[in-house]
Image 1 (cartoon, rainbow, N blue to C red):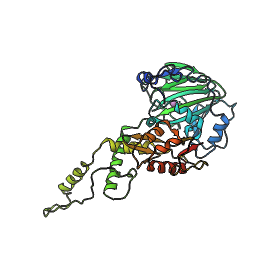
Image 2: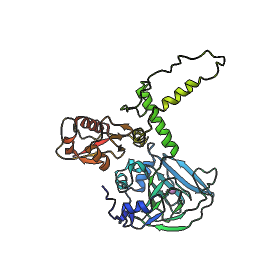
Image 3: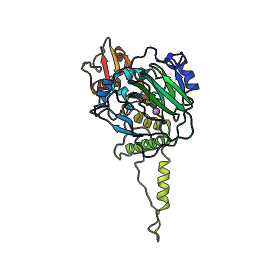
Image 4: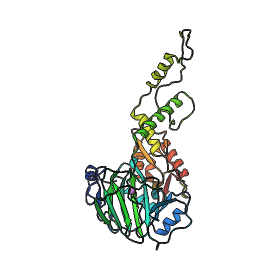
Length: 394
Ligand code: SIN
Ligand code: CO
């Protein structure tokens, strides 16, 4: 794992600890030669091939007649490399390509819970997506050719109306940098930026980190509470209900023995209102409930992810391989909190143990270590192999 206190090139000979303290969510940082001798992990042909597929999210953005245009993929044709001012963007590259999933590992001094995706942009001379801001933290790593970034911490973030993409109405650059392959620019959310390609083959890799809105956090918690009520009262199963959590059993019924005869039948009885309030008050909005929601929600696979089991036949539930490695698929998401473990949108029926903790943090483990796992964990891992969530490399 990454040592938070060790200085690294990736952060300009800063330690992750000092980067997080001084820059993260605070101010931009230009890092020259963040990855020395960096070679683009994919070619333009690879990107075009991906952008032709309907299980890959891609966009083309170009300027024409002084206005901005955008089209969503999949594409069957692409502008010529000799035509200026266009950009092809391919989203979630970490799900589609091992080299990009590997690259992302270098940023795991930031919790996985914050990771969004790795996007690649490929631009012809003069291409860019226009001056804009993102709500994400982003590392913009130059992969090929040169790009000029202009940035501004301006307060005015008003957008040009009626355009297919977000373009700032009044962008006033405060700083300007030309990035070469291996150089990287970190931008916190809401820093205005405009990147223009200075080459006929300009590739930029954006490693993006999202934050949930407060409304999403609160709504998700309410949903988890609703699931808990459903499960405990046997009303049917909700999204995050398995395994069933401890909590109040609201299986009883409202009673109104003592209700007096009324001459205002349209009025809702006060005691029914109070019963609703009394019963919701029985729910504990605690860390267990919050982690159930966050764990299941954050590990939900990307909707375009398709898992495929690998060929190698091992049976972890009956044998312990002497050598080899067990690796999570690059599309698998795995998190934990307290004793609960979450994988690909599900809470596990087994508690966190040292083996699962290693697998979640390192995304791989020596296969022989399975010998130390309890039966339930071995059965689960066997299931993950069959589902293509985990792979065995001899
Ligand atoms: C790009 O790579 O062209 C756009 C990335 C960004 O501005 O976030
Ligand atoms: Co941006």
